[in-house]
Amino acid sequence: MEVVIAEERTLAELAADAVERLLRTEAAPVLGLATGSSPLRIYDELTSRHTSDGLSFAHAQAFMLDEYVGIADDHPQRYRNVIDAQIAARVDFAPRAVHGPEGSAADLAAASAEYEEAIAEAGGIDLQILGIGTDGHIAFNEPGSSLASRTRVKTLTKQTRLDNARFFDGDVDQVPPLCLTQGLATIMEAKHLVLIATGGAKAEAVHQMIEGPVSAMWPATVLQMHPHVTVLIDDAAASRLQLADYYRHSYANKPDWQHL
Ligand code: GLP
Image 1 (tube, rainbow, N blue to C red):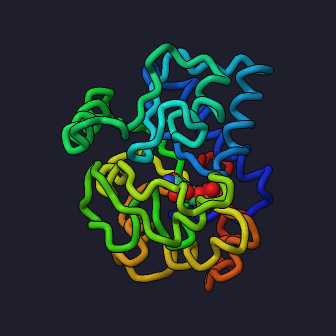
Image 2: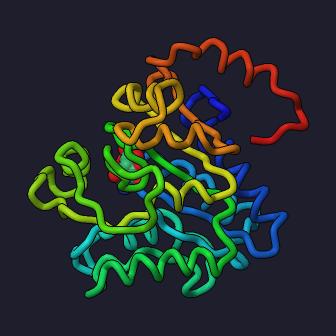
């Protein structure tokens, strides 16, 4: 696990560099897209590279991490619509190249299995962008999620619904109680995981993820078992790390030839 502590703008540029390298070198790249406010700057940076430098997504596919269950198709907080607004509709993805779990399906178990198949058919995810919840969830894998979980229905915790109420007029009761989410084992199959977290509210979750024991109580700790994880955090999110000086030293002395 590589930990990079830097300013928000630098973090977004580093993540965009990794995505750009993939898009420019792979014939059929597959991106994993996260919702939430954390990846926004990455998406802004990618959009600007698309507009100014001709960075193209036309040959890529993308898979979203999760979706609310039972949210209206035209609700602005439906994750499908959020991803369209934040990145998908701002660049040149081919029609139907961006996939999301079908949260309005009549048979959610079947929709989950189909989503897993679609990811496999695309050849798996090359680079997955991730955020982290204050309770250590990734995608919507809440505390207690099986570390071997696949795409399925999950019940959101009160904390996550409180955290996300800001997107629903500050009203926690408007936040849907259920979601469809890629499982932890699904996420672990992506080749490169790039997690971004900023702000002091994430400091404990970030500390547990990097330095705590692997446990379903802090689902993001499963990333310790992945061979290629990049954690991009600002000073505030890094404020509880025991080995922050070591991570800073390692990154400052990283060989030039080594990418993220
Ligand atoms: C939601 C999403 C997660 C995201 C988390 C943190 O729960 N399902 O994918 O990581 O929010 O969101 P934010 O980046 O807004 O703090």
